[in-house]
Length: 460
Image (cartoon, rainbow, N blue to C red; front, side):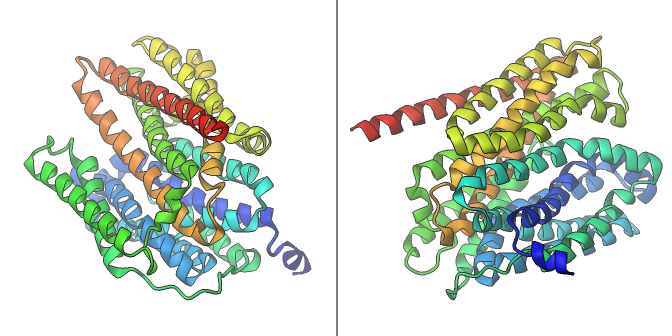
């Protein structure tokens, strides 16, 4: 107990706790994919229904992030984080016990709710407990956890499914969730602003409806052939988003869901847009590459996951170092190095990805991609949040997380469409990965242009 008391409020102990919770939510975005065939056989259901175990989770997560960040401001970030962990853990148990596909989908929706409640609180709490000079390092570690969780899902999922069965893909969250919940109350301080907050209910309803429509259209568009219903849903989402933004502008003096003051910071605006673009680029690279190893080279899921391992392993090592370097020399320079490294690695992967390639030839390019990921995650978060006032940290984290999630959804939809458009499966995979190169090049150009504009403004 004395040791626990000594660690309470320690920034690094808080970071470990938050990162464990964040790890679970991101791991569950990819770990379930590998279990789909076993779920279909076990529950005697079709692919369309089982795929909603993936889509439903992503949909709820994307739609509720902004609202959850505001609730964190109102009720306290620690409280919302703990509630989110509890909901996520309980839903994981229900997923593992699911007697049929409908029950499993419903439990996954609840799991997405838990993930949405806890995710934006992690960045807001990191901003609160770390001094400005150490936030880059902290966000680098937090970001490396995110990268490793996303990329290690197929490998860990394959091992669990092979050894214990698909239900353990969900049961594995229970001990981790219980540990995170205990550590939250033992180590994480309950920080409050001392101000009373009111929830912008019209804003909540409009933002949730808009994000649900847009996210659903992007995720399901390819399945329905981008028909009129999908197009109508996308247009409806865009109109609802316009109404939401109009309402937010009118409500700036009365507790808006998204304070316009956030966008007074050029750094926050530019970096948040880059978060979305880079999130899309990473998905267009990783998703086709995983399919290439399995569908073209004939690897098992576990073998494919191990083949991809150089990237997350390098990212795990580099991210904290990149975060520390961002604090010293500026995040933009580190981010440019990351963009260049990932882009170079991806170009090499596209050139090497042929029908008779060996997994070993991808080791160095994947290490370059891992170096790039490690150098991108920390600077993106650090530079976005650098000039955000403390009382707006929760809202900023919610907006940042939502844009990242929408970027991933958009990247996944674009990659799926391009893979289907290729003359051959291999050509489709090349097209999808090429989009990642284009997005990263555009992000680099925007970053350079933004830096020159800022310098010119400062000189003037």
